[in-house]
Amino acid sequence: MTENFFAPCPRGLEGLLADELTALGAQYVKPVHGGVAFAGDWPLCWRVNLESRLATRVMWRVAERGYRSEEDIYDLAREQRWEQYFKVDRTLRIYVTAIRSPLRSLNFITLRIKDAVCDRFRDLLGARPSINTESPDVRVHAFLTAETCTLYLDTSGESLTRRGFKRAKHEAPLKENLAAGILSLSGWQPDEALLDPMCGSGTFLIEAGLMALDIPPGAERDFGFEQLKSFDPTAWQRQRTMALQRRRPASDVRLYGADIDRRATDAAGYNLRAAGLDDLVQFRTSDILDLEAPEDSGVLLCNPPYGVRLTSPTAAGERRHAEEENAEAQSELAGWYPHLGDHLKRAFPGWRCLFFSGDPALPKKIGLKASRRTPLMNGDIDCRLYEYRVVTGFNRDKPPAAKD
Ligand SMILES: C[S@@+](CC[C@H](N)C(=O)[O-])C[C@H]1O[C@@H](n2cnc3c(N)ncnc32)[C@H](O)[C@@H]1O
Image (cartoon, rainbow, N blue to C red; front, side, top):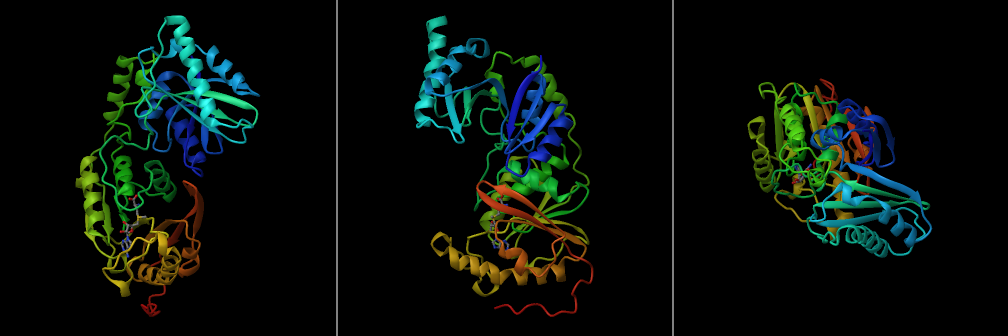
């Protein structure tokens, strides 16, 4: 049986996700704003949940119809055969998102969909699922446009960005699927050296390690589809085991992480250990401006802080979070980028250097010509991935910018 699915993803990654889904065996793959629609059978859905590095979740499309009022949505939800999709003893939560819906209260729509599902169960079975807003077994999503209501059953459960191992967080960690997408866009290949010189809690390094060893990102976690009646544990175990057996040896993988803040390198080390990838990475606690290239060539990839005060050469050791000092932090960053550009020219010839940033001052001030800029959203922040190819001997004779 072919089913219809929708996988949301960070905006800007739709094309890459479409390619990934096609490679996993999806059919009728159609990228749209913020995600990709596709079709396939249940085993495909499980595979996408287990193996997609880019999807935020995978939702099974239950129904879609035009609506005018809350009662139209109630009727649509009441008509669906929920009792064939999950057992009444499963806990439930309803999520509603809307773009240009004329209806006033999303809370009220949420309530009406909950009533519809529960009324249906009660009428048929004399019992209804209970609601659990913290960690529900089953999640129903309603997506409303101006005219149409689409109902989905969530096959992922918790967001697929949760890779399943514990994580220590440091300053503004990237979402895992965004980091994986940026790594794909960087063109990094597992036989190249990869350095994240501002590694924070190590998201790029973890995603790179998982990719390099061909470890499915969902190897360590549970999924929402395990709560649905369509779930076949034997077939799933077979599929999962086969995917895990693809794991490659770590022999050729060279990952390097650094950060100015020891708490960050500690957190990244902890996270890499939790993911079983700590053997792959060498860490240093260092200012990027003091960091030498660990190899003759490779890929340097990071997301510098943006709107957070930087520890600059003149303000050594000083670190203050900068919400109230945003403007100051921004101008400090603008003054710091020329030093970064000069350091890359001196210390990283032969490297491809990529910066993911929402700061328009970066490309203006870094003093290097970007070979590529790819627009991507980080949540609501409009960002770019800037690529600089640092050529051997590039501007070598020019004295570095004065450190002010
Ligand atoms: C936005 S965070 C990086 C988040 C990381 N990509 C993650 O997903 O966890 C920026 C990092 O840059 C580090 N940093 C700030 N100034 C630095 C400098 N001059 N040299 C090296 N690291 C620096 C901060 O300590 C912080 O961990």
